[in-house]
Length: 439
Ligand code: GLC
Image (cartoon, rainbow, N blue to C red; front, side, top):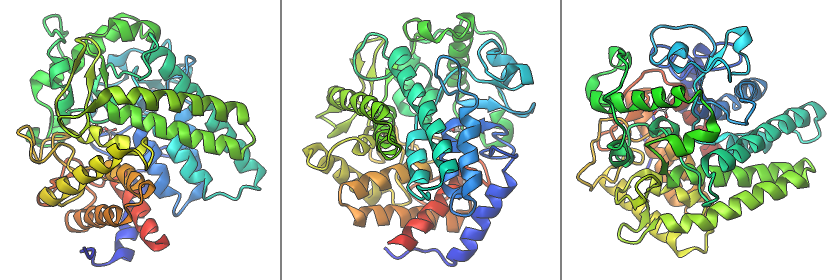
């Protein structure tokens, strides 16, 4: 497929401009209206694009995130650097002041986490760095330690019974907030004692592209439950009525641990490299339990109910990042990626486009996202499918060049959806353009 991208220089210029406009000094907001704070995995992806034109600023993006790591090791999903009433739920609703490390400076955080892609981002920056520069080695070392502590926190707090995989306790932790994957698990979340609230997301984006009110009630109920436990992460896993094992989330953790092991090797930190490899090996073996032979891909496990989901989302394709090329399941995953792209050609759908639940416009229930495409492009390259990786890059760039730097895209038509002038879309555009130049 020839990219339908008219002017790549112009696209690059626009992407850089968006990232500069969304830069708040040390951190980048995902989108100025819809998401006016720092988001965890957004920042990691953003650093990749920023690195193509301002490497120092890219390192800073990751450092700012790591500065808000909790004492127990968790890196939170949102850092509320400045007050902004346009977003709900804000810091007063989360109420984490006892745990947020910079609370004394008035900077609070949310109380949950997000997909661990910091390790992958660190390796991407590190691999383009002058390895002889002592200052950069120092910066890399600090980030390496922060990511290692975070990964160890996952093992302790999100797999407290040593089952081998880590759980998410809120759909927002998955990063795929509104996926069909969470529907079943959410039915166990009671809303009869919910305190009143008013959502703000639908002030900025068409309600048809956002979660329903019934789902939003459950999201808020979980938050209020965790808050009632004083955000003691050591008890939340067992206390939460929602506890899901997401193959995509675990695959990110495995891939990030492998990245940490390589960076640690380069920095002479063999202790850390051994620890990260051990964690990755343990999780990779445990991933077998999530293979769904009926679907020919991975699917979620509900740890509260003890049941397997039969939903086919992109989360179940992401283990391509974790499997070895000789694993026969990788061939099956790649066949599915190809099939999905045949049916829905603009990027990769977030939900099997042939499934009944597929909705091409409602967020995470069908639309394609450039960050997920980027993860899978890496997986496809590692498995020798440069052809399919290029197709994914080209269709992603085509969506952006026709519809703008939107938050997500209708995978059937390439129509842009959700927020505008979105940082991670701009960043992934730069990363994809750089990849094309290197090929
Ligand atoms: C949405 C996405 C989430 C992202 C956030 C900020 O909530 O689902 O993955 O981190 O927006 O862009």
